[in-house]
Each structure stands twice: as C-alpha cells, then as structure tokens.
Amino acid sequence: MDDETIAVVRLKVSPIDVDRYIAFIADAGKAWGVSANDLERAGNVAPKQGAVLNEWIGKFIQAGGKTIYAVVDLGDAPTVRLAVPLEGDADADALGRLLVPAGERAATQPADPPSPDGIVSELIPDARAEVIGRTLVVATPYVLRSLKRSVPAPRPELEAVLAACGDAPLAIAITPIEGVRTAAALLLPRLPKEVGGGPTSIVTEGVRWLALSYDPPPKAALHVTVQAKDANAAGELRRIGEDALEEFKDRVRGRAPSLDRFIRTASLTVAGDRLKLDIADQNTVLAGDDAGPPDTRARHEASRAKSANNLR
Image (cartoon, rainbow, N blue to C red; front, side):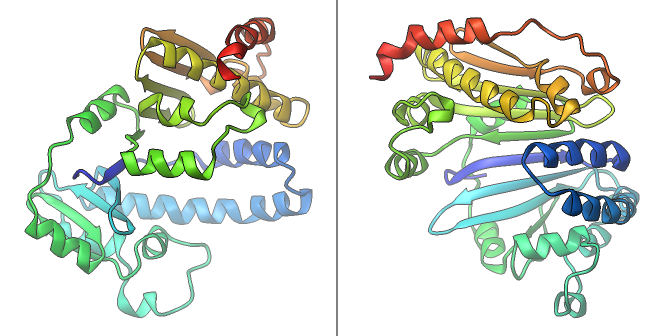
C-alpha cells in the first residue's frame, strides 16, 4: 500500500454455497426489475458457473492459497493489483498460473462460463504474476516494476479499517484521498433526493473511512462501520443511511420476500463519531421467520425533521 491507495479488499477463499446465492440473487433481480426470461437464463447457467468457480477454489486451496487482497490505487491512472500472501509451503508457481491465464488462452474468446483467471485478465490487462518478498503479486508490468523499486508507505489508517472488519471472509476498507473528495463534490454537488438531498459535502467532508465486512451463507451477516470526522457528522450520515434504507425497503417490499425480510433486520446506530449498520443472520430470515424489529419509519421521519434545517 502507498499514499495513493484508496481501497483494499480482503477475500478469504473458501467454497461457496451456489444454491443459496442463486436464490438470493434471483430475488434481488426481481426487486430491480430484471425480466423473468433473463432471470430464468441466469438461473440455468449459474450452477455451471458455480461449479467452475468451486473447482478453481479447490485448486487454489490445494496450492496453498488462503487469502487474496485486491488493492486499488489512484495515481496518474487508477490501477488494481492482487496480492496473495505465501504462507507455509504455498506453491507460488501454481497460484500464479491460476490467477493469470496462459498466453494461448488469453488470446482466445472468454471461457463460457467465465473462470477467475479470465476475470483477472479483464480487471488487469496484460497481467503478470511475480513473487515480491513473501507475496505473490498480480499486476501490470509497469506496476510490478514500480513496486520492486519503491518502499511501501505506511498506511496505519487502512490497517485500522481492515482491523475494524474483524475476521470476516470478505472485508472492504475504503479511505477516500483528497482528490477523490474534491472530484465527488464537483461531479455531484448535491445528494440524490432518494437519500434526503443536501450538499454532498456531508459525505465528502464527513467520512474519514468506511469498513465493510460480510459473512456468506449460511450465516450471511453484513456489517458496515463509518468513521466520521466528529459526532455531528456521524448524526448527519445516519440520516442519509436511514433515507437509503427506507428507499431500499420500498423497492423490495412485495417484490423480493427474502430481501424484504433480510433488510428489515437492519439496524443503524451511532456511537460517538462512528456510524454502524448491522444486518442480522440471513439464515434466520430466509427460513421464513417474518418476525423482525419494529418499523423504524416514525423514528426515521423524526430524525429527518430534526436535521432539515441543517440542509437548507
């Protein structure tokens, strides 16, 4: 990581429960207006795609791979690189072949269904895999040369954000740099009405970092922590979060039962200068238990009214 890094994604690799994902994604498609024909086509190919992915995951684990990090930098141009810590007797050559497609394959049409190495080639054009220290790095030749020449800049805040994600299999740490804040404010001066409107500066100046962690099915719990600049900013961000939750609930209500039950378990809390979103164990709500927390619309409307004067 360096001073241009804005996001790090950590994925602890393990087999996926394809059937649970198919059902959940199909419900999400209904909520966003995907046609029945498209959903049926996706449902027909998803098992094959899941089988290909789980086969790849098996090979990755057999080669000694455990965790993949994706690092997003904003320099002269946005770049993405992957990093796989080489623990124990991990086979760097085998892991590299799994992540970077062979030359002959890269020159052909994408595989059907797509495999992870094909996805990497789309994400990182002209990707190469090299060992730097005790880490297998997948990046463009230019980025690899830069990494070998440079001394990594300490980013304690990014490490703190990842720590806030705990031990979840999927963790995303985001720390907007100044250029991103400025560009966002210029491109979108005001927030969408769906999240209550108001100046974008509520977000661009109020958010210091964001940590997201997700446990896949059967647990399927989602947690988001936002570090605000102070307690007042955390309160404003909560108002935006409540508006966004209400918009999402309206969209899925009556269209996607499992998502409806899932999102109704969401809880937004503020502790000092931190905002937390927690969504309960999805396994419970997908089992058909409609019991959930009481409707928060009244509190939500009261919160909006209280902060309205600050948005004018």
